[in-house]
Length: 468
Image 1: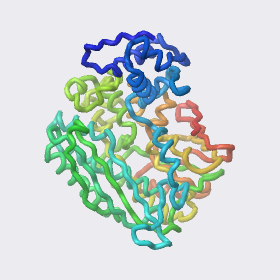
Image 2: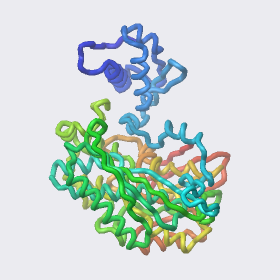
Image 3: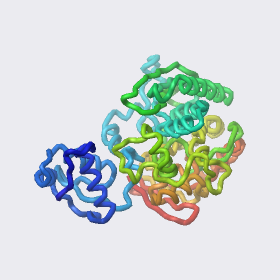
Image 4: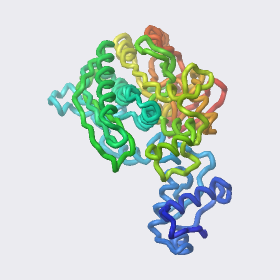
């Protein structure tokens, strides 16, 4: 394979390799399934170091453009492989789970979050739950709005996003007691001054107070603000939550055949929200940002993206933040920044009224509608009555050309919380959710199977099958 390597260019050699192979795949010069020359041969043909070639091919593999077949061999991946992964992120974090899944599964394996013995108080009847997550790249969209408008209040919603991504995962183990949460803000101080940090802290405290008004015992344990301009061009907001609960109260996600799957809508306006929610949550924001927003933002705010990403994947959408979102009352910026809804008040009521008849709770975060595959054993998940696709997700798919199959792996697509109960209790779950102004419906059911897999049919009749 002969490459056009310019040793005098300011672009690193490994990036030149990435760009040229990526371009060859996009244009069809390299076809699906075609085997690339070995690392050694590419290095010799182009008079470059083998480890430089290996670094480039590993990056192409992470982007989902090539697949490794042996120690030094790669083939071109399927043409419809993930745009999400090509931007340096992963919908299911396979490479992380390859490591994490080999670690200790905790005291109660199968639960949505890892459960440990009660190391904090030493009570053998109790357990500890600790969880860390954040708002992801949604904070970059807030940064864009801040730079365009000068209003730091936009970051108050980012504080909510970071908290909810922890809280709603903890809900899925049945957490019903006090929660202590700590926030970490990593910022570039030159781009995100003190008023941004103030808005985040104020937003966090205000949201925790709102949650307590709804009956959720959650409190601030302080946090950390770090100025790390070498690590981030903008700002990253993360949280860590810890709680103690009785082992007997843990929902262990014993999902089995003949269960109803009730989905709680991610859109609309609940009784405890002040405005309409687009349903976006805090997953898939890398795709939403680049596929929806136009190249204006790449040119004006280069600190908001990784320069290693291929140019055609950076801010390649048709919209500016204040443009109207089709079929919606929201602007594009409002829709993408819509704060992540918490289902805490709803789930607490469901747990109180249904108790041990809840077989499982799944927060459709990383992995979206395929998240369920990680729970239960020998279960076929059938989702055949999904909500209609919300306008924002419709527009992300239209603007990006992302396959619908991938959309359901990246975005919640209309419901972000699933409750697994006997069929005769499904209507109670729906009614409880409705009492909070949140639409709910039975989106599917479970059957027995040889191994876990998902059969998904959306509201337009498109059908997909997923396995682990």
